[in-house]
Length: 103
Image 1 (cartoon, rainbow, N blue to C red):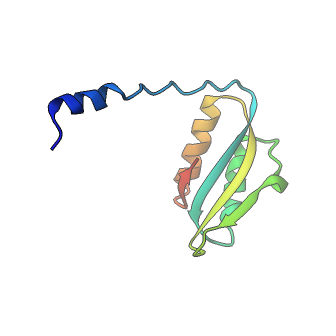
Image 2: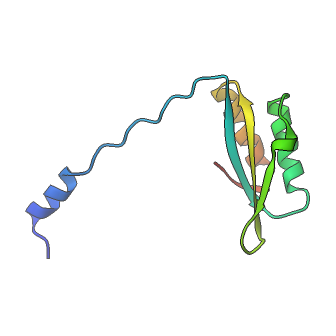
């Protein structure tokens, strides 16, 4: 069993987390969208992204299947103009009901 002194020492050595870096807008912003694998998943993601970035080039889209083929990740880079745009994009992607995660 550890003594109280040793527990205190461990707690004292934990570093506080650094604040997240600020993003300077406008910028190219890479995201990965993960959802259930389907023939039209990438097209669905693309349709949503175009509504939030009219300059989006769908030819840069990269689709990666999971090892077992159950999930797909769609990787893309869009032109981000601000935090409100990104929040709206993430909300609309999740609202499709097909997206499990946006990173």
